[in-house]
Image 1 (cartoon, one colour):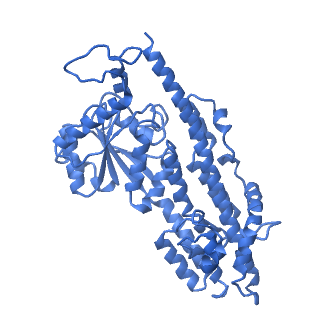
Image 2 (tube, rainbow, N blue to C red):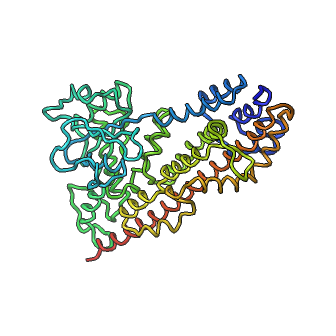
Image 3 (cartoon, rainbow, N blue to C red):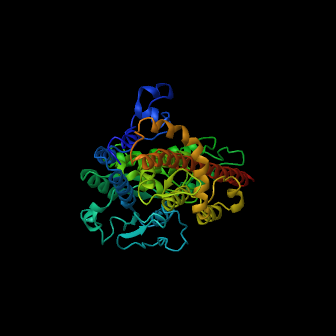
Length: 464
């Protein structure tokens, strides 16, 4: 393909700034793409440079090879999370929860009231093994003294630390965070088992939520208030950590029994936001879908790869599809759609686990899903979806061809690119939007059930 012909691809991958449709005619790239500011995600700058360099040389195959390499490297990025805390704090149970496992599942971290972690133990995520949760021994034991702890657990291999306690944090925890901070890494305090704290506090109130009797040694509100109790727990932790010399500590309140409640979703968001940008997608894909915010972040990060996938599909191992004016790698597209389903928990195994964890029939979850599940993605289905998207891509292909010469041997390949790239892009984007929307609907079903169960529990607890 000639250098002049490759301008079509260069225009497409150069659209890193957004233009409203009304200004499209003022910008070649935007006019050709025909997309508004909310439709086309930005591509990471370093990856864009490699693609543009290849296109500038007039080499479509090299551009596709660079895009393929960027995608493969993204899949190999590792995230290592260290979790530590004293015996009985719920550390191992938290390790299981963040991996999407129950304590009794195969491959789960061993839990118990006695110290079960005698050395740093790696627990790769069952679906995304490039994300590893490390269950570390508690600090302050005879074998792991504070002054040698970080060296013993090989501090350098972790991206950040999560320090867990089910009561209040110790002086050893504070000493550990000071050393972590000195060495330039992030740490997060997690106060576990807050559901037990709420249950314990509830005993002091009658069926109407009024304080049974005042106790001078413990100041409690006259009316039961879950938010006030939780805020008191948080503030108590923060004040203790500050007293020990901690700098502006953040404390996240969690319950292993209900990860979608309290601060676990906020913890997930914070971990993602504070990771280096190139590692965020790797962590996001592994996180359980506990909030709409996490689902939106997943979608946004995955959108940044759509152009790369489109370029690779239409240049590497591209095969003309019967009945369509496009050529693409259908096998790669099958893989991509299956991955989207896994990322948003839309597979038989993921839905079965979610239904089991929330005591719901799996049929109720499937009832709100409009997209095919992971197991239903086939080459025939991909071709069917491409056929639907091809009509919408025609208007973009027409614009592309206005900038391409129509003489010489390059015509066939240029026309194929003009139709294939926008069709593939629209198909991937549309499917990603659909599965993300399905995941939100599934989450809403689970959240509604959790609220209903909470109301029933609260009612039963207050019955004299």
